[in-house]
Figure: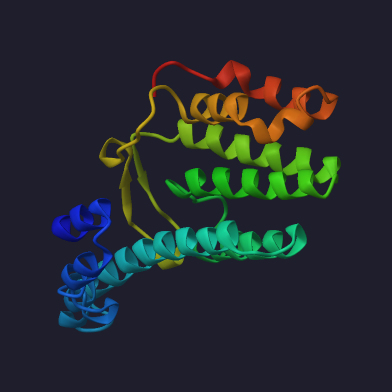
Length: 209
């Protein structure tokens, strides 16, 4: 809730938890309640359950990613955790039908690239950085409306205009701007593989979304 967030920002965690506890648990959410209202197998039920699969996939992707980011694990094990999020997205979205998930895939693959840099495995680092930036490019190329075709989210409608982003310009531009400023990459900035991948996507860094 808004109040929970305000108390959290003030550092009053106890009060923030008190207000957060006023929400029902996951299984009693509004979305689950609506899904349970419809007869299973009906047109309305399919629409509801597929919408819920879409939303839960987004939630799970972020949670798995955050667990991998903040885990005190060696690079190889962190890569394995990031790959679980990649696998989840591949299970739900078939044949490249990712829609908004291209943004998640961009971030995940770049995080994997960083862990390969930690391992001094620059071949795989370049591979995953390339994949990550390509997903940013594919996100920028999405139409204003995407109607999913994958079985688990079939007919779910994604509209780019409903997405709030805190950055100006295209997704590729945002990712490259971050890479340019991120000190983590300083050790590889002058390496040919890194320059080749980054410069490959410069032409797609647009000032407008």
